[in-house]
Structure formats: structure tokens, C-alpha cells
Image (cartoon, rainbow, N blue to C red):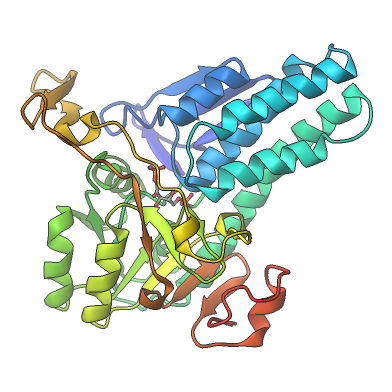
Length: 371
Ligand code: RUB
């Protein structure tokens, strides 16, 4: 991802590993300041996931894997039984950070699998290598998603997106923003409607910032304005990311996605989900089984931003003691989706047996066609 730092354009990843240290862009500070945070051990990395220093399904998957690598390195001098206990405890700490995104749990499982045999040094090596591989595979998948999704974008398209499914959510082109980046690279004239995405405003704070950095034309809109532009014929397609996709295609993504999908269908606007294989959960048959994270009430009753003095400020917008509910995600039933943009290509309606081999399990998304 391109970032302008002190007037110079640099390529920066959302997060990376340097030996036992993990570094990540502090997404809580964007767009008002660009800071890199250093995490010394797996507990700090787990806390960074929980407090949303990094966020987005893919990025928290990478952070989880790096946390596992840190735990392995922290325990490298322990006897085997203590090492196993340490790694298992670390995996539980990391799993408890955020419940909805499939990528986090899969990353932990993949690291445990890689460190599940041999002596301590073989296990450490296995876990660290697997964590790095997950990042590399995500970078490749992100590029493949960009190429597959670009096929859907025509010159002059106006595309709506919700939340942030960009390079800060999934290294290093994003999911939903990846095809848009590719289309712009190819010279297509593309415009992006950016939903602000209350309550944390990842659209306003992160997506708008990413698009500005890349010079891609966009306008930030209040969440409530999306239907208005759809109705006026000013939205040609919607692309969003995903946190967990069930076998039947039901998709959990940032709260508000469901509403956008329903209104898109009402207005006959194609609605696509860009997501890698890591986000598909083959163990659940429908969205009813997806755990929806409930976050703290202050995200709704207060707003965070920059004060007129240029300093970070929190203001209260609802009276103290106001009762709040704050689900972070919702589930969009598969019937509202035109398809998925994956590293394997486009998966779209209608039924085709070809999908069966894509994720190696019969019955996945049987109503979709793979091409
Ligand atoms: C982020 C969110 C994103 C998906 C897509 O929620 O809902 O749309 O995670 O991510 P949060 P990706 O900010 O609460 O983590 O691009 O990695 O698929």
C-alpha cells in the first residue's frame, strides 16, 4: 500500500514480523496520524487484535499467526511438555481476542498444525515458517482477487463499498478494494462511494484515507445515503469484504452490510463479496452459526476524532447512561449476493458442480458457479 510519509511515497504493509517483534500500522490513529506500533510478545499482539490496533479479517489472521510465532520463539528454550503447554495457552489467548473473522481461527490452527510434531526446535521452526507463509499466501491471494474482480468492473463504474476491506484489512491490495485498485491501474475510470461505517467509522477513517493515498476518486457518504445513490442510478455495483462465509454462502461482514445488500437487490445492483478461501468456514452450514461480536457501548454513544486544536478527542453524543447495543457484524443471506471474488476466480450463480473441487469439499456453495 502506498503511503505518503513526510512528502515521500513509501510502500508499507499493514503488519509485518521482525524476529520476535511484530510491527503494525496503528489503525486506531488513522487518518489523523500515521504511526507504527511495536509488539514485543504474543500477549501484546493479542491485545493489539482485541483493541483493534489492527483489524479486518485478513490482517487479524496475520496478526494471530505472528502472535503464534512470537509464542513459539518465547518458549524455544523450554522442555517439550512445557513448550506444548505454552503454545496451547498462547493459542487460547489469541482465539479469545475477536470471535467473528474465520481467518484468525484458521491462522491459529494452521500454526498449531505446523508445530505439532518433532522436538522443540522443529516445532518452533514449523510455527514461524507457517506464520510467514500465511502472510505470503495472503499477499498472493490479494493480487489474484484484484485480477479476478477487475473483470467485473467496466470503465466509468461507480462502486459502493462498506467498512474497510483494503490494504490495511488484507495485505497487501485488500479484498474489496483490490479489484478497484487493479481497474484503476488498467486505466479504467472508476469512482468509489465510501460508506462512513458507524460506529467505528472504518470507511471514513481508513477506506477514504487509503483511496486518497492512492489517488483513486471517491466520496465519503453517511451510511444512510447509500440507498439514495442506488435509487438515483449512481451505483453500478457494490463490493464488500467478509469476515466469515458459511457453506451456503451466508456472509458475515461489518454491521450495515445486510441493509446495503437488500437495497442493492431492490435496485438491481450487483452485490459482490471479495474474500479469500481463508474466510470460508467449511464447518458451518449457514450464517445462523456465526458468532457476532458485540463491542463496547462507547463506540456508539461516543465519537473519536481530531479536535479543532489538532489533538485526538472523544466526544459524547448520547447522554451518559444511555442504553446501547453494538453488534459489530451482521449476516447477509446468500440470496442477496451475486457472488464471491476469490483467489480461485469468480464464484457466481447459478448452481454448478464445478465449485465442489474449489475448496476441496463437496457441497460448498452449491448454488454458485465457478468460472
Ligand atoms: C472489518 C470488516 C471488513 C472485513 C473484510 O471489521 O468487516 O469488511 O473484515 O476484511 P473490523 P478483509 O474493522 O471490525 O475488523 O478485507 O480482510 O477480508
